[in-house]
Length: 123
Image (cartoon, rainbow, N blue to C red):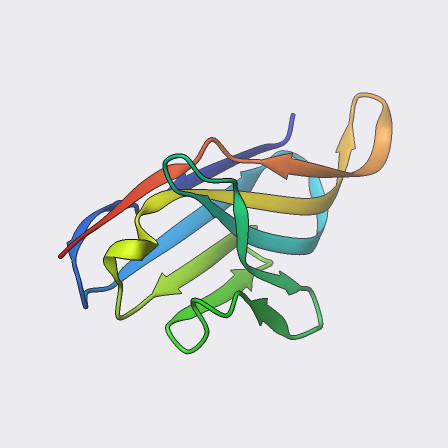
């Protein structure tokens, strides 16, 4: 059974940094697209950054130059390095993975979500 587990969230002052991790478990054959989304209170979930294996990363305009997404295929882990954090970055951050895995029904490519990790930036 594929699972995504996020970690690294917490409380930080404005201008500080945090690194989020997303570890994928299960019989994973390939990480195709790894992404981070966030959802602030009362708002919709939005894409923060994504990276396709073998291609470049994409970022929301609001985080360009401050956040960096990366992935370690050997560790089946994605990261989101967040620098120069602002109060408006406060949200629950969710990991999303488009990956190929071997499960009971065979090999398939599916989309998975983690449960989220809270990031709070104080002013």
